[in-house]
Image 1 (cartoon, rainbow, N blue to C red):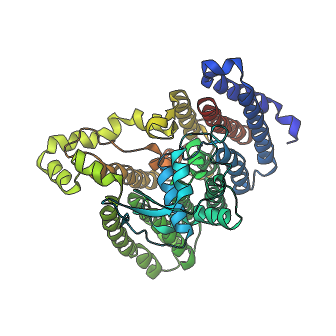
Image 2 (cartoon, one colour):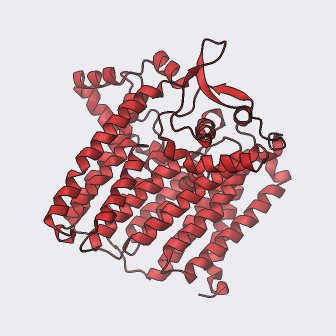
Image 3 (cartoon, rainbow, N blue to C red):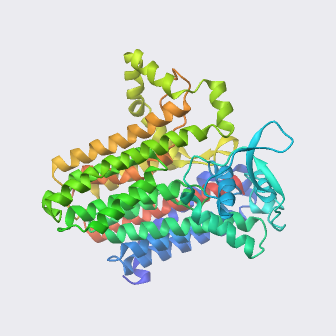
Length: 499
């Protein structure tokens, strides 16, 4: 399509993002909405270009994903206020520590004090003190990096070091280039975004089928928001999507190669050490037709490899649980009576109570949906139920109407549903054991929807049915237009609340 032939989609996109902008404007913004208008114009340019680029690369959706993620993600890198993403302050501390070459963090007694902490630099603490401020209402961006030693009480020591390598590279460059403090944050976010975009590009390129659903899920607003931060959530999400893409490759490819099985498992291990329930993605191998394996030996060995994978996950989980208390969480757990062993015993001894908690993920599902548009955290949090409800409607329509290039049989889809539920319940169960007070009546305490982002790919996979005959080219373009509108809506919400 030529650029002007897309005018109807441009108009629809503009109308939606204007609607979101007006909906999110604060009362005081109406008198001087100058900055909002500038960002709105930028969003229109990014969206219009993305739609045009898509029409020129419909057979190369991996390129489309890369461009969209970078355009909107870089906007988030610079627009999102300092350490405003959930737990970004701790991710910032760990990123700086890793940038010095430390693989493991040392929780040490602070000199001449009775409490413990992690050694970092003063500029990291300066960023923490300015959490929630945008670049216009702080002077932290004007000063050079201060290397004076500072001890902070939390640094996500339970996360593996590799999850901070992209962010640490950004911190390292800011240091050696002698940039201002703010560039540690911005470059750390930028390299994290580049990692997410690159892995998603590889995932969509590798998948022989369901490429468009992979594209739509990878550009979920919250996914881009997290990827364009110092958080490790973007890494675990893209690795989970990569593992799913390799499953799709196995499903369609005869004579699977050992190297591809190795990459599949590597993605799952790296993802699972961040969110252990996602180790269950390895069960997708049982959905691959037997004839696609190179030999009976390969089929058996590749599936038995799940056992050492689970052993690695269990060992790391034990270590992570031990060091988790080396932070503000230790005091929180003691104060709120958080104890995994006692929680399990309580569930076993009270089957009715356990059944009620088992039903919580469904009875409280609206909370999970709403939290897909919950941004920041603590007192700085902001959200949009409007975006959440409309996106739910959009995603249901997408899952039901999106033309598919592969029809999975009912047996395969049911197995996929079971694996998806194992991961869904696994995430909630782990959080319930490690976060909720013993006997807590809300199994979703401490559970955030960003933990479930990769699971959305299971939905079109499980439904896997075209309910109506629709023009493939037009419906894809329409879905992409609306998906881009939600990303812009998220950014306009941030601008309205934070600027």
